[in-house]
Image (tube, rainbow, N blue to C red; front, side, top):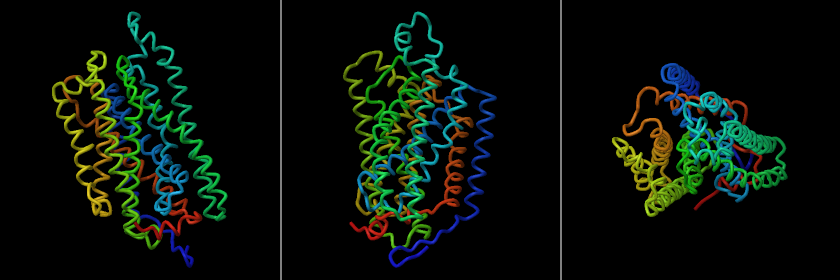
Length: 392
């Protein structure tokens, strides 16, 4: 499609991209199936990492779509459809959480507490299998409903150019914000914090939120930059539009560091055994090197790499830093999860490779499927032309 103001021509992605996606999916799926056969408990822990990682990208992307509507952001209008495509990962989340629901006894100690364990007995009204499953299903249905209505209006606007659809999505996005805040926090508590049910942190939900935001931003950046540079989006996008991507990645990297340090500092300062034991488990044996590595990949490299203004506008630098951040988020989830299974010494092998490979394939294939069905750009959005003309 082209007009006097906006030039966009729908093009299909190269066939080799689908081949790569299919290969990654099949290889990853084979490893996951073998893992569940050989060591179901260890594989289930990796399944938790994979599920919370995919949920971060899917739900986090929907969060940014909603934020754009609420803020009336202009610079991101040419890129918003990428976020919508990534948020469609919400649809396939059951592929990862259903196997976990079938293996809950292998990973969650609270599913079979000892009668003398007073802490778990007191937490039983919340931490019980039936209520856990209800929360998982309800959260997913809520995410799915908001995804459906927001993206439906966006697609419809491509055809009708009706600006009232933007106003509808603003209202829906306003409703989504408190739902997102609560569901993403309780998802972190249910799937990650409850792995160590005697430990607790009132800031843990915010910690996962910060990682979710970074993962969604990084995934979007990895898709947006090549698509824009190779002409799959609208013509006329300036590198000034990339600056906001880099600035947000930099800002939320600092936000994650602030939340992570605040959680550590408060627990260290209080020096209560029931709280410090969680951090001590991540400083025993080889885990201390993983912890140091987390600081390097999660904070130091992105901080230095995105510190200057030119680095936030450099396409190659942005792709590299976004890739590091996405890897670091998976690394972070491994750091949160694996010590509950592998105490003292780090366990890493072929089983740990299954889910990241499979998820990479899923993301690519879902994205390709969406590009065939829909425009890569919201051509009916009234802010699109201003987004193309955006300059710092």
